[in-house]
Length: 305
Image (cartoon, rainbow, N blue to C red; front, side):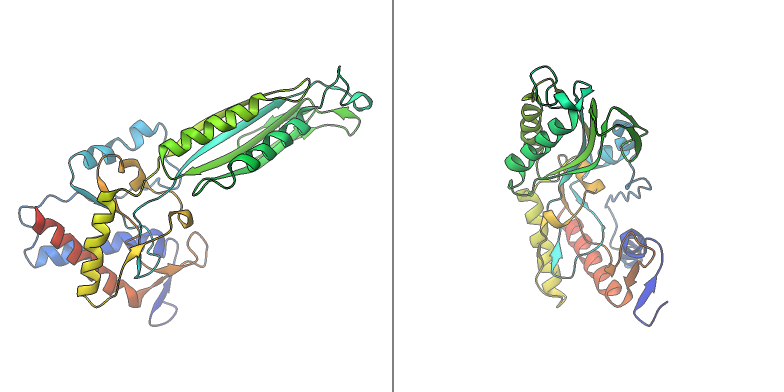
């Protein structure tokens, strides 16, 4: 405890606070005899920040539960009483490998030597920016880049490079990420990136590879209908209006894996600060009110069935 309303600890709000909220809400409903004839599955996943591979195995149980369910509620960190999440962007990775012709730099840009791998990788990245940077809710990032005569990547986060200023670089490797609001948007962006990677400068070639991670949770009518139900609960409790949170300001989450199977609402968890840092805190004064809201929402969803 830091004071009467704030506690600190690893994962306090993201998302142990949300996990505790689920338990207390269901406990309250159970003790009042309000869970009879209902079927509620609670899924706690310990590998959300680094999903186990293959995804077809690590998310198999989650998907099977969704296929048997009417709605899904996610308890990622709350962005405030006035917000809930109807959409989350998906994420995927990409790797760009560029090859040039190794030669003495005195001949660079000549017909025989060409532009080299680093200039070609720069061209490709610049074209990505020019053609895709203004697409709504689509973002992409080049996280690491190595280029030179010899490149050794240990993984997508680090590696070693050897080169000289008087040698045209033979290899460049770039690792990046891509975030998207629909699978269609993801496929469209990947097609553009592939097209750009093929339009090579002289004596160079490039290959781009993609890896899937989190799918998108698009803003469906069903999700907005759940938001309206939460909004009515919140207003009935005197907690104010609830509107959709900007999906461009949230990361990926496990609810996205089941978004194509069931209507969902996320961001229902605890409030706090400094998630993913040693200074993470939870706001205890809002915890009880958010738990009441959760319990009433679940009760009304059960009562509809």
